[in-house]
Amino acid sequence: MKRLLPIYLSLMVLFFFTGCAGMRKFFVDITEKNANKNNEKAPEGTQALPCSSYLEKALEYEKKDELQTALFYLKIAGTLNPNSTKIPEKIASLNSTIKHKARQHFTKGVKFCEKRRFKDARRQFLTTLRYSPDHKEAIGYLKNRLHSKEYQNYKVEGKETLKDISKKFYKDPSKDFLIAYFNNINIVNPPGSGTILELPVLQPKFNPPPIDIRIELIKAENLLKEKRGQETLDIAEKILEYDHLNKKASDLKNSAYYQMGMELSGQEKYPEAIKMFKKAAPEYQGVKEAIQQVINKELIKGKNLLKQRQYEQVFAVAGQILDDDPSNKAAEDLINTAFCQQGKDLIIQQNYTQALNVLNRANPQHDCVKKTISDVYKAKKKQAEVHYLNGVKHFLNEELQSAIQEWEKTLALSPEHKKAKKNINNARSLLEKLEKVK
Image (tube, rainbow, N blue to C red; front, side, top):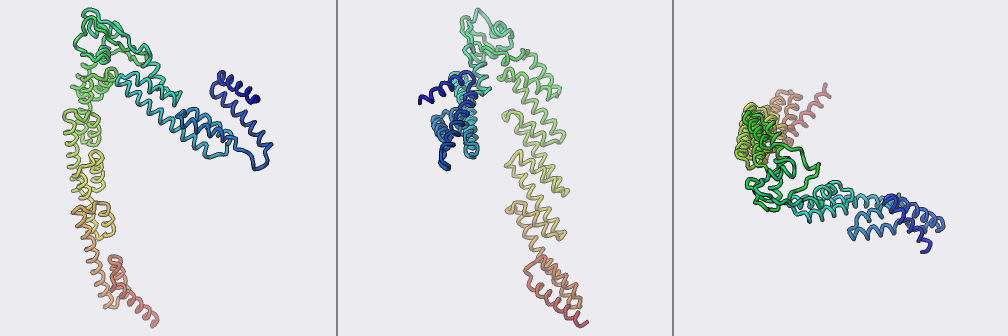
């Protein structure tokens, strides 16, 4: 024990001057030397695994949820036993757990912050740092949003409006929405004289350059009237970055998406139009109806392509509709009808194998598909009989090679046709006899 005392004292000094990394290196060097020394003295085959005690400590700290300390001991164990495959796996697993837990607590902290439950938020961010000491986002919140000077009390004087207070405190009257939001008061009605307000202290990185929201809103409204949707959208989003509760800006943003969607629909760019409509809030007036109208136009387009027998284009159009509206029965029916019609075309061409391949891609319970599959088998059977009778005619006319060819076609369509198999064997046997006679 006396011999170990100088080592522990050295460790403490090294920790304070070089931090955890320096201590780890020193500690590993010492333990490696001791381990090598012990192994030299021990008889062959009796060396103790030098990392076992550190693995035990890692497990002990992991159970206590002190994961960074557990990770420290695991890395020492890994250094002392470089040939181990399990220790790196355990380190990777523990690192994953640390990241997961840090992310969980950070997410909770952000949600608490949004609800203005700052004590709870601070606790979650500090817990995040316990798992991940270098977590930049958590550090940012603690330094810039949850510090002790986050709010400053302000006593309203006389008939001061929120804009007056905002101009005095922030040097920017347009920040009145912040005061209203954080104090849960109406932005229109001025607070009474003597009211104590909590004014959020904004750090430079959270304090964007001032803009005149009223003027920007007027600009956006004029741009919307001129059907300059993208420019309207740009201004609306800029305002919402600064005042995320601004209803007029939100309405302008939805109106811009709606307007651009209608323009794309007029250009028959239906998939692009649907994507644009979906960027607007679902409750925005006319959006649901507009999406349905575009889908109906796509269905009409698909049906016209079906009449032209452009099957691959039909599948593309109907597939896009189902991507946007997975429960659309009309699009499903359009796909199955296209498969059915394509199958019928192949039956007419007597390409029965390809017809079945196409029909098997469709819903087998679809009425048209079910009937057409049955028609394929009937047509195959009928055509098989035609070839069989042609073979008989050739046989009677002593055209044995042609007869064999016809019966082979019969078997290609109906592999179990017993008469065709038997007749082929007889015809080939007769050909062999005739060859011998010659």
